Length: 142
Image 1 (cartoon, rainbow, N blue to C red):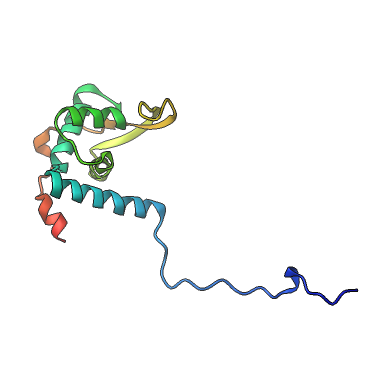
Image 2 (image 1 turned 90 degrees about the vertical axis):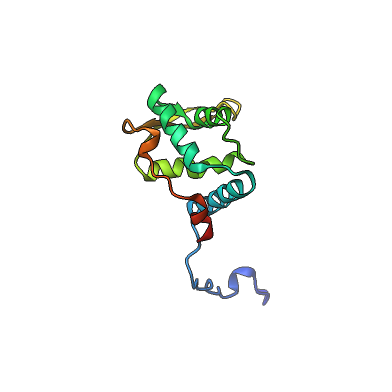
């Protein structure tokens, strides 16, 4: 028998201990969305509060719609950030406030017919004036 050692003969070293929790993919996405939103607000005067109000008003008037349809509508109204990902925090804000809720999936328009477009509906009849109107620059200064 040979005296050569194989890879499997070597002792296993333990994994290094973590000293802090790794961010989850959702946390990373939220952080990047907020950075995109802040850039759009600073560089292009993108008003996320106004975009949220217009999205909610459109859902109240027309019923459930996919996120892509809502974004396209907002862009037609003049809400044009440097990157469409700046709309993510708009949806997140409306969900956190309980103003909209997820109702299902639809075929994506921009994804070449793939599935996965989220469909949203207004949870209660609200007007644009019902939404809070904080100063977006205060949020950036924090």
